[in-house]
Image (cartoon, rainbow, N blue to C red; front, top):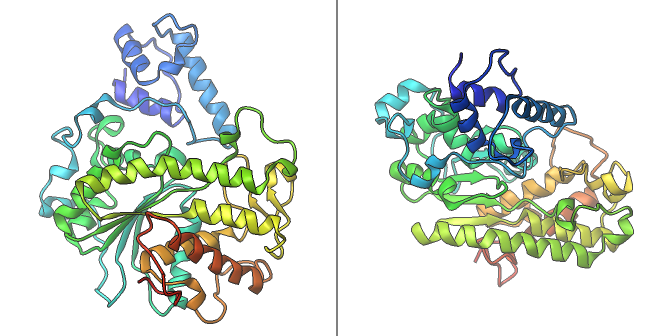
Length: 388
C-alpha cells in the first residue's frame, strides 16, 4: 500500500483510489486534509465517501473545472511558516541548488527588470503578451516562469512543489529556486488565489531577498468574477451595469489591500499591485459607452458573444484582452504608459481583431488603471506618461 502522501497526490490529480482498503489512520488523516469528503458530517471518512469524493473531482475535471476549487484544506505545516521541513530545498546551499536544476540567467541591461514569476491561467494572457510589448518598447524582457492552471499555479502550491514539502513531500520539482539563488533578478510576479495568506508570499520574498537584495514584487489582483454576484448567475447582460462592475471591482480592491499591507509591513516598500481588476472594470465601462470598437459583449457565458470581455463562467479573458493585461503589467513594472509605444505591435495572432483603435484604447485604459491605483507604485501628476 502506498503512503498517505501518494494517496493524497493520487486524489489531487484524479488518480485511481487503490482497490485494497485504506487503513483507518489513513482515512482519518485524509479527512483532515479534505473535510468536504465527509458528506454525512459524522466526523469519520468511509471508503465509500473517499471514492465518491474522488469521482466528484473527476467530474469537475471533465467539465473543465480542474484546478479551481474554492474550498480546500491547507497543510497544517503552514502554521509554522517561515519554518518548513528541514528537507525543503530552501535550506540547500547555493552550490547544492545549482546541482538540482538548470539555471536561467540574463545579462543586466539598463532599465530592464529581470523577472521570475509564478501564476495560473489568469496570469498567462499577460505573460504571453508582455514580451511583445517590451520588444516594441525597445528591449527584450528577461522572464523565467513556473506556471500551471488554477490552484496548481498559486504561490502556495508552487512553493510546496519546488521545495518538495507537504503534498510533494521529498519529491521536489525545482524550477525557480536554483535560478533565484544562482543568478541576478530585480522582480518577481505572482497571480492571486482564493484564501491567500501572507505566509504564501513571504516565503518567496524571504528567499528572493536572501540572494537578490532590492528585489520588488508584483501581484496581479485579477478581476471581477460572476461568483461575486451570488449563487444565481445573471440571465442577461442588461443587469451587468457599470455600477455592478464598479462594486465588484471595489470588492477586489478590499481583498487585495490587507495582503499587500501585511507583506509591506515585513518588507517595506517592496510589494505592488498590478491593477488588472481596475483595468477590466474600466474596459466594461468603456464597452457600455460604446467605446470598445469590435467588442460584442461583456460576458460570453451570459450574452453568448465570442468577442466579449470574459470568455467563460470561470472568468478567463475574452479574445484580445490578453493585450490589456500585458499593457497593465508593462505600465506597472516600468512606470511608462503603453501609449508612448509607437506603431502597432505584432502579437502573432488575429491581425484583424483587436483592430488598431481597440488596441490604442487598451493602452489608454491600462495607464489610467495603473496611475490611479494607490498600490501600483506609479503616479503621473504631470501627465507625461512617465512615472513621477
